[in-house]
Length: 163
Image (cartoon, rainbow, N blue to C red; front, side, top):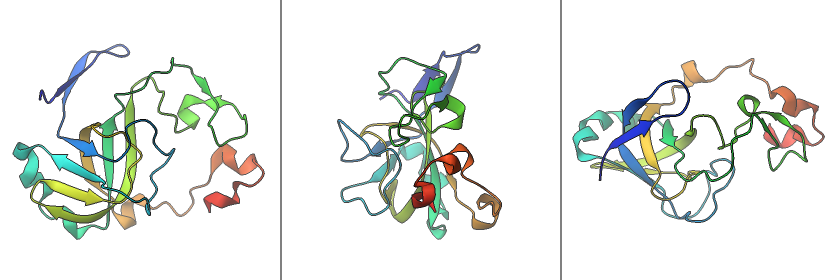
């Protein structure tokens, strides 16, 4: 498998190294967000040459997974309507739509265990075989913003399910 991903979207052309692959039970549909309690085999298989980079990652409870959304088929639009938002329209950058100018996804998942070059995780919202671009630890004191809000979602009826 080639571990280079050539990105030609936008004004620049550059390559990134694929550091691994996401393994999930999803082959046709995925949830809109990670579901921590989701049943099934969720793991990231890191390419062997990056295994040493996992050292001490297991000491964290959560991690960010940054990946290339390689199965996007929809046409790009700067205005989107999230499927759960009752028809509300927002700019793509005010959404978590997978149909973006650069097909980059990010999820926060629980680290269950790490065995050699495999990270067993809670539910991931990505298709089986999705290329992984990077992994970063979720650090409680750096990543939690106590004054964060829900933006335009707070204007919706029933938004309380997010709290």
